[in-house]
Each structure stands twice: as structure tokens, then as C-alpha cells.
Amino acid sequence: MILAELKFKKDLVSYVYFAEQHGGLAHTLTEGSDMVLKREADYQRLKRLAAYPIFLVLLTFILFFFVNRILLPKFNSLFTDMNLAPNIFMETIAAAAHIIPFTLYFLLSLTTVLSLYYIVSFKNLHPLKQKKKLVKLPFAGKFIRLFYSHYFSVQLSYLFSGGLSVLSALKVFEQNLHEPFSREIGKDLISKLAAGQDFDGAVGEYPFFDAELRELSGTGKRMASWIRSFIFTAGTA
Picture (cartoon, one colour):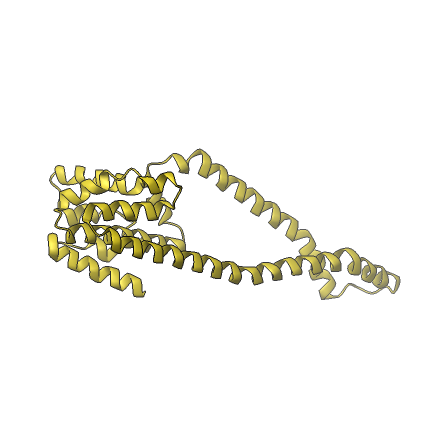
């Protein structure tokens, strides 16, 4: 696809790919551009929101360094000359001076271990296994599950609305070479249907789909109608 060669975002390329299959290219291009613009606006908003806490953290570290390296030694010397015991403020600063380096080393080590795990192990996992691990993350797992449920339901709804059967729609997923998740979920679902499993039962086995999506049943227009109601609910959440 030309968009993939021009290094467009994978999710936008995938949206256009599905649009070519169900015939709603013009609508999808408009929707896709709105999606990209919204994500860019959200990204810029998050950058602005993150700037203030980061500034406060840096300012706190600078002030702490100044107090610990310059002011505290002078107070210690003064208290020693006057034969006074250090007060609670001085003891707190001294304790923090010992704890903070170990905390920074721990965070650096954790970041290094996670980076190595991603490069050596996670990156090479099957796409579906990656998603199963991601939804187990605390806090972020819920949003990841909602994102993939929304993505899958949107594309499936469009394909059903275009008159495709369940098997034909899954073959479209399987033939999507631009997005590994779509390709593997299509291939896996087709193999489960070939083994005699019901579609709703097969979808229900994936933990990276929302519980409501995993409970869907029926085919064709009935399923498309249900999925559209799920999309509306997810979009307003």
C-alpha cells in the first residue's frame, strides 16, 4: 500500500486497508484524519500537562541538592559547635540523602531490565501473546483492552455492513499485512471456526477484548448492530 511506503502511521494504514475492502474509503479517510488530528491534540495536551510536574520534580531535586550540599553542612557545624542535637528537619534531610541515590539506582536498574526484556523477549513474542501480557498491566491494562476491543469492533462492523460473512470478514483480517495483530487474530479465529467452535465462544477466549464484546452472539446485521452500540458506548466512556 502506498500509505505504508510513505511511512504513515500503522493504525491509519490499517484503517484505509479495511476501507478498501468494505467500500467506505471516503468516509474512512475523513474519520482516519480526524482520529490522527485528535491523537496529535491529545499528545500535545499530555505534553503540556506533564511539563509542570516534571519541572516541579527537577526544581525539588535542585533545591534538595542545594540544601544537602551547602546549607546542611553549615547547620551541622553550627549545631556541633553549640553542642546541640540535630533537629528533625536535619535528620530528615540526612536520611533522604542516603535513600534517594538507592532509589535512583533502583529505577535505573528497573528501566534497564525492562528494556532488555522488551528487546530480548517481549518483542519476539507472538502478537496475540503480547496483547495478553499487556492487558495484565495494572491501570493501563483496562485502557489497552478497551482500545483493542474498539479497534476490532469498528473494523468488523464496517465489514459486516458491507455485506461480508463472518468468514469473509476474518479473511480480510488475515490478509492485512500492515498490522500483525489484525493478521494473527484473523488467522486464529478462522482456525477456531474450522475446528467447530462458535464465533462468540472463540472471541470470548481472548482476554484483551472487553467483557461485553466477548459476550456477543449472532451474525450479520444483528451482530453489526450490536457492535455499533458497543462502539458508541466505548466512544462516550
